[in-house]
Amino acid sequence: MSVKEFIHQALDLNRKDLLRQLEGLSAEELAWQPAPSSNSIAFIAWHMARVEDGWVQRVFQRQPHLWISDGWAKRLGMPEEMRDLGWGYSKEQLASFDAPSLDLILGYSEAVRRATLDFLERWDPDGEPVEARAPWGQPISPQDFFAQIVWELNQHGGQIAYVRGLKRAEIDAEYTGPLAPSPGG
Image (cartoon, rainbow, N blue to C red; front, side, top):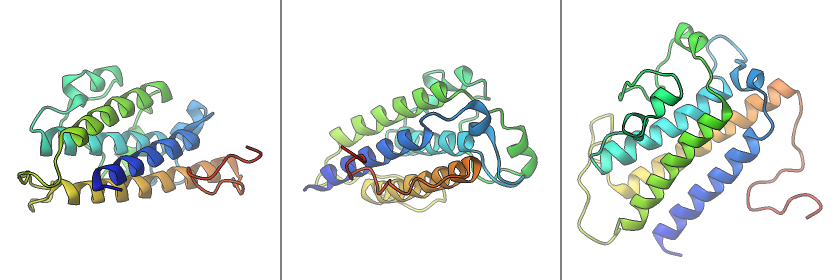
């Protein structure tokens, strides 16, 4: 398996798992915070897309974020702030986060993923190095970025599953990951 195939599979598995965790959630469940300083499921899902959008569009392709260029900020009723990726929010900011609908979050997330996969398709891991700087200022390669984004998406996917379990007071004991067959299937 090539590095690009591995990355593609990791992103696909993450997407499949995310969709499973978000399936059937009500608006109230999406907006629920376990504690005032905790993120809601909607916030986490939005943040996941914002980070991927910011890194792929701005850091590697030096293009405007889809958040602004494709009008997602307006559709989600949020400010067109390019630098707001959902990091370092205060309790007050988290409390005032107006959770967009699941359809809008998933639409934005899907658009971002298509852009990521388009970049991945064009990227040659053995070709000319891509010069980029991570948000914290250090040089970063696409290989390191994809390792970081897969880690981040998995961390946040686990957070969504955890918050969902807290809210619904249930455990999905049958689920062993996106590669496993469905129970009874």
